Amino acid sequence: MSGRKPIADTELKMLQHKSFSYFLHETNPDNGLVIDKTAADWPASIAAIGFALAAYPVAVERGFMPRAAAVERTLTTLRFFWNSPQGPEPDATGYQGFYYHFLDMRTGRRAWQCELSTVDSAILLAGALTAGVYFDADTADEQEIRTLADTLYRRADWQWAQNHGATVTHGWKPENGFLKYRWEGYDEALLLYILGLGSPTHPLPEKSYAEWASTYEWINSYGYEYLYAGPLFTHQLSHLWIDFRGIQDAFMRGKGIDYFENSRRATYVQQRYAIANPLKFARYSRDCWGITASDGPGPDTIKVSGIERQFFDYVGRGVPYGPDDGTIAPWAVVTSLPFAPEIVLPAIDYLVHEVNWTVGHPYGFKATFNPTYPVRSGNPFGWVSPWHYGLNQGPIVLMIENYRTGLVWRLMRNCPYIAGGLRRAGFGGGWL
Image (cartoon, rainbow, N blue to C red; front, side, top):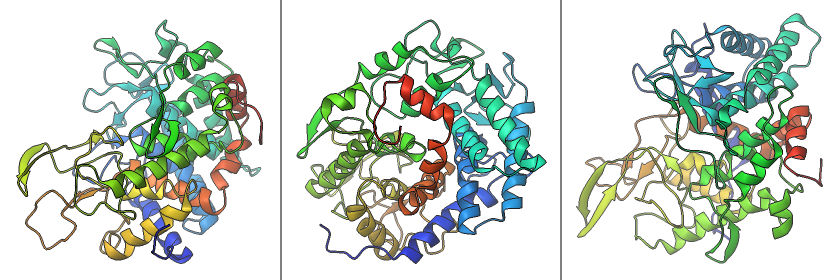
């Protein structure tokens, strides 16, 4: 156990509120698109939009936003995606019911010749389905939210995204077709497969899930046996929406645990790794950890205190096998709150009070910091990312809420597509 006191509930709510304000202020009110990060002339990210759609119900319940404003923002967003161009043209918004990873904030068209992203589309659709369950009033606007969420989800052609293979591809580009990579091995695609299996229109075959799970890697690290994925966010993302407590697929039945317990163990491995600090990075401790896919100070290779260090920019950092360059992501710590509050709450307290990470930052925690990377500044915690990312803010909002009230989990337990997808994947027990 940590020697620090847990953070006060009022401070947790303040952090949640600050994190949510990203979606209030970094969204184009004309189309609902949310900027990927707070850099000039940056595009929207469809994953950030999915997080926003799931966060609006939380904001209404918490008093961060009036219900009428949340309805208006949600409707604007869903109408944009339903009416935006879908087709093989290189400047469309989406194709086959999926959407491009990055979209122009103003026009909503494909940005940067990016890929049509299957997993980011899954996050977007999960957000839409959350809105569809939450906004249940018998008004024209809320009925339209439910209809649009349903039709958007039904439009996605999951079978097309398999490209004649057993598993789902990472994506597609109009210039050269499907990407060569597929969703295999335990990762954030758990949500993708559940949504694909639950589709009433273009469902994935049940064997696609078994094929995905056949590439799992079970390891023992720092005294914990668990299903391996390096970056911490991969143990969190699907859990933003799905309550995995007490439900098991064939793999987890064989191990005698569930995915929630697996994420708890992965969270503890992160803390144990930071305590052991095998690469001797600055500030790593029982309250200073959180290694995940994130922004960083690189790319750069320099000598620090006589040791040659390689630093990365945005990369999938992870434990115990790396890569690791001393970069800590506060948001990843918060997002593990439901799994292991006994170690997460003291770590949040450390980040708020010792690192002082919320002072002067309009949206709470900055994306990352790296105390090992030498920078000329008065900041004892070294390099700090200049940006806030929608991908970081959303999980903070949703997981603080799941920890406190279970709101998003409760909503999605009432989504027939989630329950159906879980059953087709072989899940049983618990609330199912």
